[in-house]
Every structure is written in C-alpha cells, then in structure tokens.
Length: 226
Image (cartoon, rainbow, N blue to C red; front, side, top):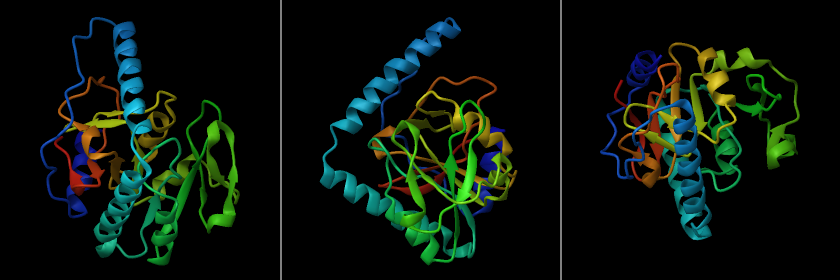
C-alpha cells in the first residue's frame, strides 16, 4: 500500500519532500498496549501545541495551504478531491472548499457513520453544511456511499503528524484507516499537517495505510519516500 501511494504521488507531478523539521516521536515499542499508550501521549502533545497556536498564525498557514493545493491541481482540471472541514485547530480552512469548486474541481466531504468506513457527499457551498457529531460540519446532500472515495484523484487527509515514510498519526477513531484502502490505486493520498508536524519517524504497523505525500504551509505538496 505504501509503495502504491508513493508511486501515485509521483505520477501527479510531485517533488520529494523537504527534510522533516519536527522531532522524532518514536520510541521502543514492546507491545500493542505500549504502542497505544505512546500514541495517546503524542496526541496530547500535538493537540496542546495546536491549541496554543494563535489565530494569526492559523490564518496565515491556512492561506498558504490553500494556495499550495490550488497550484498543485493546476494541471489536473476537473479533479475530484476528497477534502474535509477543519475542526479543533486542524490545518486548512472552509474557504478552500469554495476555492476548489471555483476552479472547477468536484469536492467530496466525509460523513461519519459509527464504526464504518466514511460515507461521502458532494460539497455544493456553505449552505450545504450542517452540524454533526463530534463538533463536525457535514454535507447535507445525497450520500454517495463509502466507495465514492474510489472516484477521487486526490484525498486530503487530516492528521496530527506524518513522517517521511508516510506513516500518519490520526486522532485514533480509525475512520480514515478504514476508508483509505478503498481509494483508487492512482489516487494521491496527501496528509495535511503544520510544518512542525512533519517528523522524521513515527511508529507504524505493517497493515497501516501510508500516505504518498504531505502538504505543509511552508513547503506545499511534496512526495514521501516509499
């Protein structure tokens, strides 16, 4: 899976990522319980850092992320992009969704369905969003089914951190872990993080679905090593 996604990223015109600037969070893992506890500690640290980021910095980073994505998609007119509405300090902005549509791209947003893979629905404007569980905003239109991710040319994946191998640390609910295997082999899976959240190494398991690219405010969209 990691090799597949890395190859897909290169096929859509990515250059290799700059050196990670965040710390190495990995440590000695002796058991599944140890791994889970380490991940919980990292999540707390990363969420605390996001919570301490001021609004001016967030706005500047969101603008840089949006410009980078639109520039990256310039040679992919009419692309289908699985995106997300940022919540809880996640990088990005709702305005990017409208900018993608203005450029002629089709935007799909996730819909949380208990412990199942994510469902998807088209984003048609701010009025198409409605409050949902976990403080999320979700599209109110027709549900397209979990398999709709297979139509995407690019999937923007929210993450707390990602390493140079494409191992990503999410919030722990596992929705994207269940959904990303359904993406098309040629789709670019792009983790969206702040610059300091692109790190040298995170612990990962063999069955993890790795992303093939990272998007940061300072470096834009860059391919990761297989």
